[in-house]
Length: 286
Image (cartoon, rainbow, N blue to C red; front, side, top):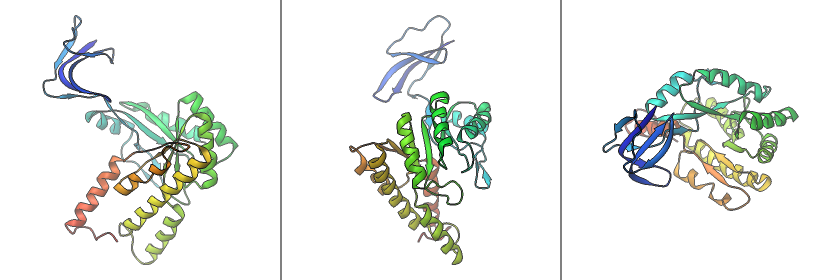
């Protein structure tokens, strides 16, 4: 079945221009002006609309069990909602506990994803280090197409990776041609101050600003230490504030490269808190 999208404004990574888009068997086969439509082709007049490729969301959590909770969307409901908004692929997370097999958790996540409405892939978290973990990273990369491994510098007592885990995993990722990704916080400081705030009767959002400063310092530490020792390409997730987006630039052009992603759910949450603080619904951030 062929489809011709005629006359819209086509957006690609390089250009924005008026053109027709011809698709066959689910693939784009031609982009150009006044394309001929094969017999039986469905024609859609785009008019003044934009014609863009399907979106790829590189940071989702579908039916994820996490520290006593489970994500509300499963792979069916979450990807169906994404498709309605133009997201045609997600990259989700397979997160083992410190004593779990990354390979087995990945296989479990694959089974959950069988009901997905869209394409999907996985980041696999590395939460401990051993010869078995190193071997399974190789199996995941070579046999299952996993090319990114996630590391949490937060969540002490659950899945936090210390420097021993980080350095070994980063070096192994370099050997495999994979990308180590980082949730960068000073987990020890966060844990200590969590206890202190709870002891003062201050749960919730009132310690947000000091936590943000610790995240910024952790990202600098992560970038400098791992780039110098591992020569690895590093990917930082959950960037949400202007100063943090500038942070990784010192590592660029040295022995490795740094990329960042701003998570849409983090942006939404910060906007929600900022708006409600201004109108007096939430207590001001300290």
